[in-house]
Image (tube, rainbow, N blue to C red):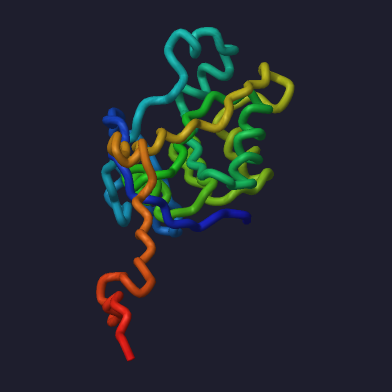
Length: 209
């Protein structure tokens, strides 16, 4: 399994959340994420909210019927980071199968918290298909999750070209003052020298013999 464990920068909070989900662990140690309350025997139950899918209702209506059913029953969320090779491979696999997905580019504290709550670790790429979590990228595991969820195989649905999300621009540095922009810092003036310079012991008078 290939994954990247990383620390993320502190930053602004992310957009308001909407959908209520439950994260829990079964008696075999498997992590589940569901939109219905877990069974009484569930362990480490956490309630969390996620933002809605990036696919709009109009876009969903244009998808093949098999994809619409899969999206409705098992939406896909992919957590990624910048400069992450396995993240790009995960995105390419989903696009090749024509899978609509929500991608969360983890670059600030709010997204770090969302990732930790969703999958239990700061590991990218991580994917949630319906109620199943997969940390790291394994091609066979990804295909298996999508097959179980009912997504068409490669070639059975139009491929997508969903690209990497763009991180929010960093805050601009405070502008320099007009005076500082207009001229450089003043240079130190050279000290005066010679017999008549301030502090010199010379008097400037010629003494007689």
